[in-house]
Amino acid sequence: MTQLDAIALSESLRRRLADLAVAEARVADGHLARALRAMWADAPSRGGLLGDLWVEGMFGATASDDSLASLAREGLFSDALMCQLDRVGAVPRERRLYAHQAETLRLVATPRPGAEPAVLVTAPTGTGKTEAFLLPLLQRLSAQARGGDGMRALVLYPMNALVADQVKRLGVWLDGYDGVRFFPFNGETAETEHDARARGLVPSCPAHVLTREAARSGRARHEIVVTNYSMLEYMLCRPQDACFFDRALEVVVLDEAHLYQGTLAAEIALLLRRVFQRCGRRPDDVLVLATSATLGGGAPDVQAVQLRDYGAALTTRSPGRVHVVQGTAAPRSFDSIGPRTEAIDILASDAVAGLKTLAQPTGGEAHLWEDEERAAALAKALEPIAGPVAQVPPSPAILLHALMPRVDVARRLHDRLRLGPARLEELAEQLWPDADAAKRLRATGHLLNLCASARSSLHAPPLVPHRLHLLARGADGAGLCFDPGCTGPHDRKYPGRGAVNDQLGPTCPHCDALSLPLRACRKCGAPVAVARQAFGGDEDRLVAENQGR
Image 1: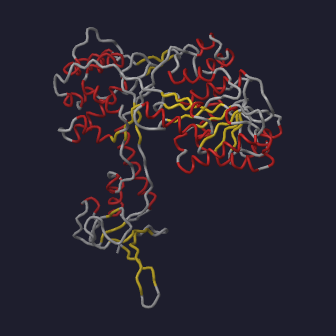
Image 2: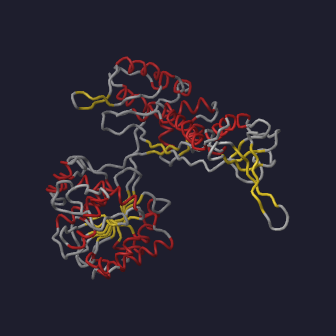
Image 3: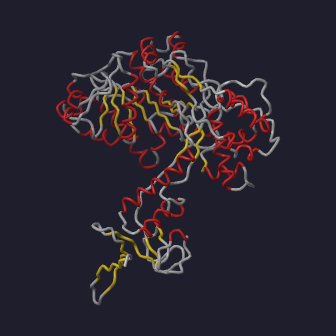
């Protein structure tokens, strides 16, 4: 397991992306190529192709005392399914479940004919919301006998990419398990076996029903249909898909439910009513599980009321039949000794640069990387802001797990990321508002690396787990200012003209002088500036000025 320096990587990507855009432009003019490269490698607000780096905290949810093994001993979870999930490594049997996962499992463990609830689960990103509906869904299908020939569970997504992700997960979870089969149904699903072979499609596991023909014929009877709401609309209209809808339907899952707002939410509610009607089921006959990271707002009690009303309207049942399960992020424990010295001077230094490798394979097994010399150097460098350590462990990660909770700025980083994502530059400014921009950015990068490296064991969560987001765009073209006295950046100037810019309008964003879009000859790469000029009457001709002559 290797830990990347994301800041250095983003800068490398910025340069590489600019080089790629210049190569794709095929401009046979060195001056113009250098100006374009300078612009496309700049910040996004100044024409750059790579966006700002965003930091998002990924704090785990509060854990429960339950595991699949303990629930199985209580008779609330299938032994066979527990062994299957443990065997494939999806959910180890003794691993403690998050509180929202365990609560959902207990809520729906016992079927309630004619009084099935709707359960809305919200939890922080990366805390197992998918498991919160998959575990009870598979448990329900494994524990009960089929009540008809159609689908027993409908898993509904707003887009195909999410369908594909779920298919991969189910392929791992159900590989070698005979209890449940699943059928992903969207525009990419093959019609016949011949069609699937021609397109090189193969099932993700034996439980994966691959073709529409097999699903409709009943040769490969499926329990779960994974689809999107557009395809579900088609299924309800097509006679050949009538076989999916009968009294077998037991569970409906709405993942990413926060995307169903306004008019779309009303359409989804009506779509579900049509599904229930086609299946000969009342809404209260079907268990509904909905999950999202961002439903509702405000204080937890206010949010619960909002969610309950939303769930009642979406799933067509009384608010009393809607249960809201709210997962909460588990805070880290800090014992800050306070800023005994200025932390930025230490954290910006090379002495505390982030670890490069966390895991080291030994005899086929991985363990935390050990380097006594590196650990001793870190302990010495961090002592002014973290205090001394009685005995330096050989693993730098374990050392950091002991030291970083004492660092006041690590606590402030943790507290800020718990509030939501932050742009890296803004995060650095909030941590060190009075410091030099370049220095505080370097210190923040090192701080993030150290807090992500600090852990008690290889599989334990880090002190401040986080995710980095970086967006890019394509090169949509460029313009050239025609004023030699243009006030634009010097490295974007073209000899005898002004600066290259990312605007395709008639004026330069730097000096308001005339600016024209740039094009390159497809054959020789000669750059030209393009404009339209009226020649009397209604005649309008394209005029190009070759900038290389």
